[in-house]
Image 1 (tube, rainbow, N blue to C red):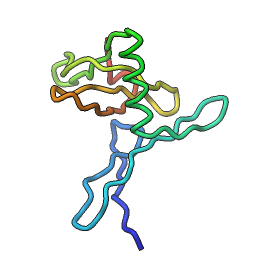
Image 2 (image 1 turned 135 degrees about the horizontal axis):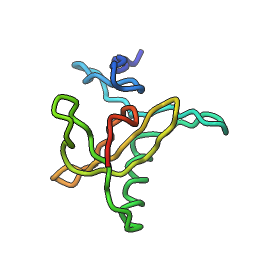
Image 3 (image 1 turned 90 degrees about the horizontal axis):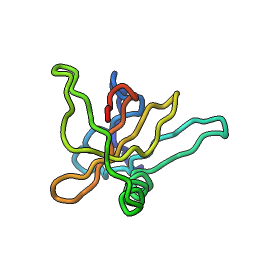
Image 4 (image 1 turned 90 degrees about the vertical axis):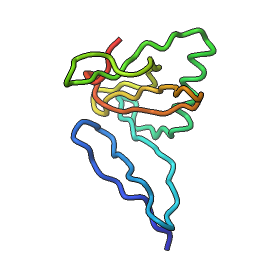
Length: 113
């Protein structure tokens, strides 16, 4: 039987946060279930990153920052809003200095422009 990466719920994050896979375990693809009036939709990390890249190609500037609650100031570089729902919070895609993209999830109040 294939072992799966362990999931745990984080107080600040509405979606499960994946722990690192242990020895012999394979990393799973990150995905989030988004709820709306039209129904539920599963979005994968790859789809979210592609959405951010499309926004970048369309000329939309990255304008969302993570808020550091201790200092109350913006942290890191700007990112693109990929989703925002009342039930599931928000997902923002950031680009690292080496050019790779990553997704950060949280409530809408965790991000600022």
